[in-house]
Amino acid sequence: MENLDQEIEKKEQELRKIRSAFLNILEDTEEAKNQAIEERNKTLAIINNFSDGLLVLDNENTVELISPSVEILLKQDEDNILGKSVFKLSSKELNLRPLIDVLKKKKEIYRKEIEIDGNLLLEVSSSSFDFGEKKGTLVIIHDVSRDRLVEKMKTEFVSIAAHQLRTPLSAIKWSLKMILDGDVGKINPEQKDLLEKTYYSNERMIGLINDLLNVTRIEEGRFLYKPEKMQLEGVIVNALQDFEETIKMKKVNVRFEKLKKLLPPVIIDEEKMSLAIHNLLDNALKYTVSEKGEIAISLEEKEDSIIFKIKDNGVGIPKNQHQRIFTKFFRGDNVIRMETEGSGLGLYTTKNIIESHKGKIWFESDEGKGTTFYFSLPYKV
Amino acid sequence: MKKILIIEDDKFLRELLGKKLSSLGYNAVLAVDGEEGIEKIKSETPDIVLLDLILPGINGFEVLEKAKKDPAINEVPIIILSNLGQSEDIEKGLRLGAKDFLVKAHFTPQEIVNKIQMFLN
Image (tube, rainbow over all chains, first blue to last red; front, side, top):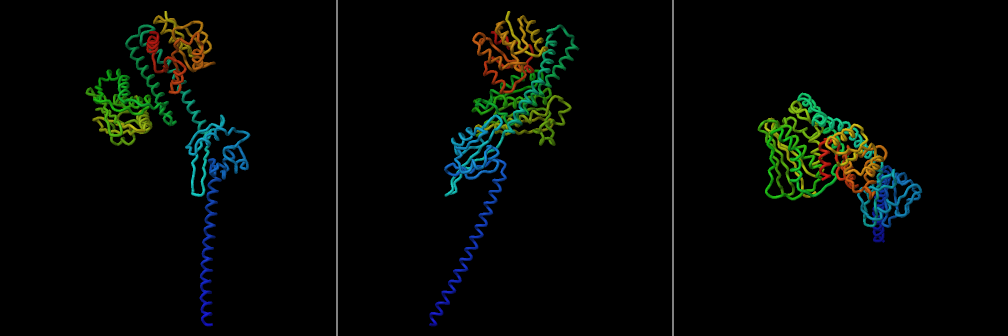
């Protein structure tokens, strides 16, 4: 009997333990559930407030979840989107075909631009996810119509402004040149001198407009227009030819120290690279004034890149201004008085060009002794 | 005497260039817009055409396109002489069949004549 009592007591204790264990588990479950709900609410809040359109597709491409902006972008109610195959989406107002075609073609898309109609341009990204049991695709739709419109307007504005400004300048250039060439009769030396100065002022104005155009286009981010594989040597030789007259006039000794062997080609946009080299050469010529002016251009090969070097023994850049040399509209204190021509855009443009080729640009300079500019271009971009 | 057709809407530029060409012994024929330009390519059969792009009515690109599509005149060499000059414009002009693309503000009248001579030879 006593044995039985003890047995019961023991069992009762065990049961109590089990009960409290169960209660613990229950509590944990409750907590986990709350956490899950909280997570879910958080995710939903993020999705609901997402300004981009977000579609979650299951592995059969049925739309499971959308953010409210999808309804606005696709001009379609939630009821007509959820639970349907994404390939069967349709809208009375919009032709969604281009979007569907792109989604059908590939699972992984990164910022692909799709024109839905003249006024609606969407940028679509999609990526598949796999959480074990849960597989599917996430599609993000971003409306870029306004961005593109603004960009287009800006390009048009720049192009028209340039055209409008250049036309009267061309008229001035042509007429001055014809007078200077004696096409309309002889002029005396004093008249010639004045007209020549006017001609160069006008040339400066034309140059300034070109600089401004280049800067605007760089800032539009589509400056590398035509990347091609070619030898940098050729671009340098052409640039030197363009400066032939200036070099003769300035009586500066300019050398291009060619290497014995031809370096491997690099991928460059010739027009832009030529502009970068022009700018560097132009600066070297402008700021090398002494009778013993020397400018040396050379190329060097590093294992994965090519290095361009242009060294002059000109006026140099004051130490306290080294940091600002590549900023827009910067001009050295020591040259503003000496050389009034210059927009402060050359090195800014050059740096942008080199960097859009994935290269680097740097310099060494001692005021009064000279400056050396370098840039490197990688072989593999 | 070689005949040069200048299609240019700006009166002053048109006359300057006409004067320069005449003084060098060319026969300069002038047109003030695209319509007149096309007409004169046909009626005057010039040896070379200088074509501006921004023109009232049909623009220079359209003139170029029309000229290249017309078998009667598609052999006439056309040089674009414009103040547009972005890569897109240059590429479009050359693709449509222009011999060269000169930006007005970057060339002197003499340099333009040199180009013309080069293409005439």
